[in-house]
Image (cartoon, rainbow, N blue to C red):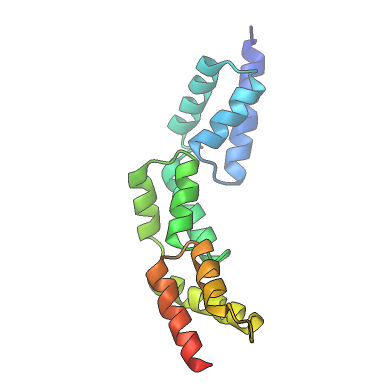
Length: 156
């Protein structure tokens, strides 16, 4: 059985973690569950308390994740949606987070990424295929990637 002082110390540790950066509910639950050696009821109680206190919020996490991955990593909406769903974030929360991304900046970021990749593939006979695969691997829709690739190939 886990003692009350150990639970209080674990709660404090999780508060410190959550005050430094955003975590989603599933990440914190996994950390607490590991620290409690698999006691799901106690872990659920601790995570629920952290949510009530405002330390853990899937909405804040999803918005920060989408913003960071879009602007810093150059990911598209498809990849961001997939990664958030793998974290257990609700679909409506993911939709709201993706709506907060500036689509114009996302399109220009895709253009820059694809132009850089295009320069590195100069003279490659499979350039078009590799560009399409690269853009889709970054999480952009096929139509978006195809438009950019077509423009780049015409400039050739």
